[in-house]
Length: 92
Image 1 (cartoon, rainbow, N blue to C red):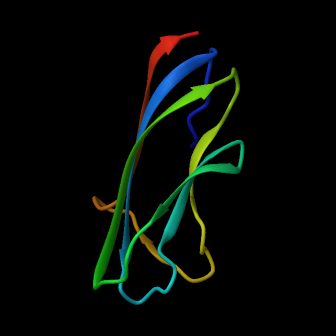
Image 2: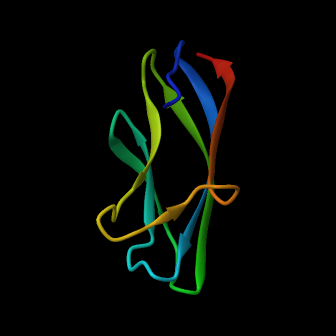
Image 3: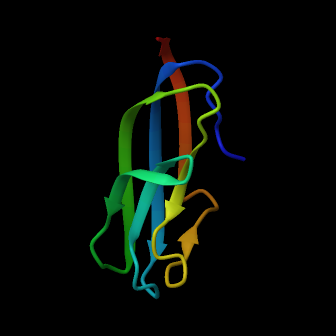
């Protein structure tokens, strides 16, 4: 499920993505309506982790998601290792 804005507002989103060493792509993106607006990149190591906090101004019905930029190459670990959350700070 993707968060959907109900009002024209400013939202705070936090993202944490964990990749395993067997993958070659370590790049994620925060997207609005499928268009990446923030890129997150990690260096290669046994376990790579990317964290980012952003403020986004959203219009009604905007959908926010996290995309795995190298989806054909990278494996994202979900169970307790990767997270995505957001909260509305104020209406515009």
